[in-house]
Length: 636
Image (tube, rainbow, N blue to C red; front, side, top):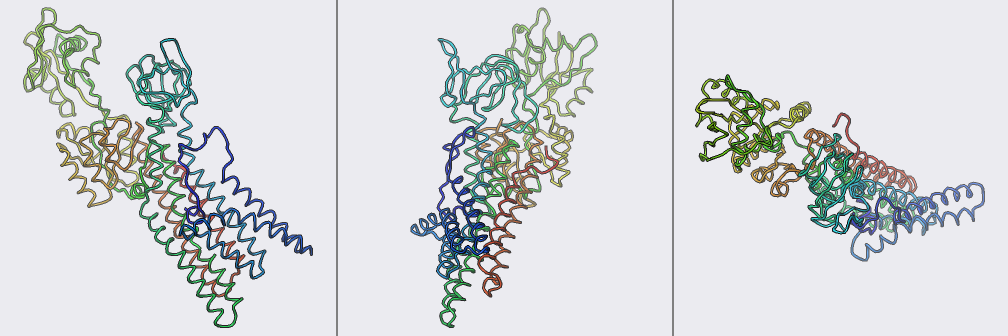
């Protein structure tokens, strides 16, 4: 950013900044007030000159020059001593030269306009990073902790793992945790971007910063207040600001050699004036060229846009880990989804029950739950959830790979796959369930088929609409899953995905993604350890951070911390808009240099005119860059 190329400014970590709840005097405040003082003094000074009071007018012009120069000259000199040439140095040389040539008013105008542009840039960057401080402000000031001697209120920063938090109605969670006691709903809109409150019961996770609804919750902390999901998001976004993309590196490559080149060109112009016997004219033109070719707007064209857009993306529940990922995300033409835990809930449940004559669904589920009550099979939880509170069956034995047998009262039961237990009169129903992507469980009572149970990991309710939103934006969608073909095709059809790749091992998934990347920029969305190779192979890997494995999150370029998949098409539109703004900013910054340079060289524009045009362009670039923080219309 221009603050780095113009003056000596050291970024302050977000965690070390003042809380958003309190206002502290900052260097940015001082710079803005000095710029305002410079502008007022300059305007009054010119007014006095025009009215004939030349000495008071000149004194006010000197005051304007001093006030403006204080904002950038010290930093420029410190940078020069450290071997760094910045735009602030070009402006310093130009101001000093103008004074030596007797143009105090022009030097004061340069100092005022440049200091104002710098102050506005600082404000814009501060606003762009405001989203991070807003995230940190979601942490409450204090937290109530349950202890042996009663309830204690402590600073939220002192909350440690395994502390039991008491979170009342309307309170915020001080850190991540799991509900121990109580039922309520959580407002996660500020954390994940989801507008609908999420119901929680004992055993459910609670993220830091969540606002509790009407119930009181006892929550066991699973992380300290200083190292939870919220602080990790802030850390990731701050790291993203430092990792630059192609356009950022392009701007840097242009800016760094341009500054010494401008100094050399100005020196050559001044030397030409000395050799031709007209030093005053050509030295003045050399000073004007210094300002005209200054790459200040180019230096800030990318950073202010990237920081604005990345900070705003967190409101979608999306953490972009680098400027490079930000730029690549805007190029995506294909999105590949894992199935389990990404498009689906990863919570198998009973979705259909068919019974033979003489049996009813409730009886069938009770008998099945009695057999499954001692099983650790993933499908057992789905059957038990459909008929909770049932006493375990007796004499239960397991037939590995097939199912269970046991006794409920006087009835002898068997439960298992259609490969083991023939569905008999329910064969057609069992085949139809399987064709719709269900895992079929046959229940037999006293040697006869009693019914079939269909279990499926259901699609997320928003999955089909998410695919529709991608299609509306011209983005191709693909499902890549390790599941068998019947289930994969059934769920893909329900979601609206035409291209399905099934029975894919981790290495196969990575190969599929490499194939898709060769055709068009591709994003992979996944959540499991088996998705890690595919996430790393994609143009951009998007990990389901809220439910994903550590391997998946660490392999990805983007972490999705929310639950509503419809936010992902929204963030792609948001990033595309940011890339367009960034490209426009770079074009304007380069155009200003190309246009002003000959005008300055041939004396068509003087120092005051060049400074005015240059700084107006810089302000336009800043204002346009800040626009990247706004959500595009029509996004969720």
